[in-house]
Length: 320
Length: 320
Image 1 (cartoon, chains in turn cyan, brown):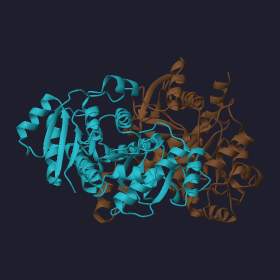
Image 2 (spheres, one colour):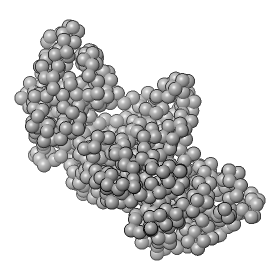
Image 3 (tube, helix red, strand yellow):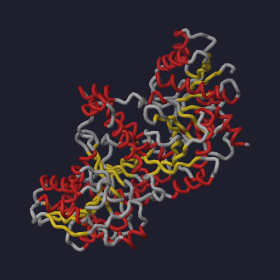
């Protein structure tokens, strides 16, 4: 396998401290000796990187100090931000200078630019997919986590096909169990959207439909894939994060006990790096408030996706 | 204030142990000395209640052994289950024999029968509303939690009006801050539903619109009222429950530390008893898997709502 280069948007995310990016890269280089990163960012970031004296073979820098506001509209993004760090990082993937891109910037701008520069598979709408733990030894892929504020049943069916391919190619699961997130597991529960989506998945003989899964079972490994529209998926995962945060951030002794009580397998930063499925290129979103270690994990995750050439393989599979 | 009678569906819920109902009643009678309960249930339940020798002035019993399956369709409920414990308990409220009803049965049957027997306020669709803790000293009212699998923006606006009245009348908050659950707090975030709902609430000068709130802030007290469609609200609360359950139900030492670490104010059973707003009568839903103590809390909650004559007062206010 040839050298893999990950393009990093050095400007996105809540933290604007260049040292956070430096620490993330140090961690990522340690985890992945073959990794090369092309960083897009400000002069301050370039200085911080130079001071760290990373191996020059492993890092390159492009000055692109412009950051995109989280809530910029698609039109604004395409008109005013083509020189931003994120736009240039995605363009590097299109041009073949990098094989994957990582950004902690806003989901909207990321999806807009990825669609524009890399194109979509067929008429599919891209979806953000995250690996989440399902107990101590299992994982689930959950999507969409916010690329689409509203979805049709046929969008959810497309997400099912994308997830099926992803688990075939990246996780070695030949027939992943696909479940639709719903308010109940009984087959008559839910709204028209989830019932129609379930029926479309059931009707496709190539897919393994597991019916519905409830939100209180998100982290129980009941499903290999958890499907939902981007609005519901985003709300579900944020509600889960919120409660985990409440437990972790208490006062005094309770904070100490919470640290001891925390399930080892439920460490959100271990799973940072959602992949944007449905575009013709490897695009990963890191959490906006990711710590440096979490950003490092996302960069390594991107390099693994790049080594597999995952998104192009999915495209080939679904195009044929 | 006159005697208040709560009608209890003794058949709904996951547990079919009559002793659970007995324990719930013992707890409720202790908490609320003026409480009277009319229990609808099986002969086995009647026996268990007799053996307990409750004060006869405080309890009466109607034999109604029939329970409704959680997922029975509205048509089936209305055609086949008019003699069920739940139907008779709701009818007791309509007839004035009780001033509130409590059931741990399925949401669908509960809503169907409440609409049928008690009627709705105007053209409103009823919504399930729960009090949830927002930190150590604050509370929020969250709705809809699953009475409606899909909602329009004008439904959400109706929920806002119902919640506004509820907080005026029951919590003494003159101008409650109403927020719509969304994937971001920025005003351009989200789908058409939540943006239209927010605009309808903003346009009503009588209401205090607080914009959007994110799901990771559910238990932070940012809003007095958290509004969402029943699908999203149900998923959000179940996702939160799921994570709290993961922390609480671990193995060995971690289980012990989790017990010590648990925030005192985040005890779901303290908040059991969601009120069905929008119908012309006081209807409370208890969690299907409620413990006896939690069911006791819901019964006391129902008696408080009955003392306030809450749902009739809301109806008068909105009819005028």
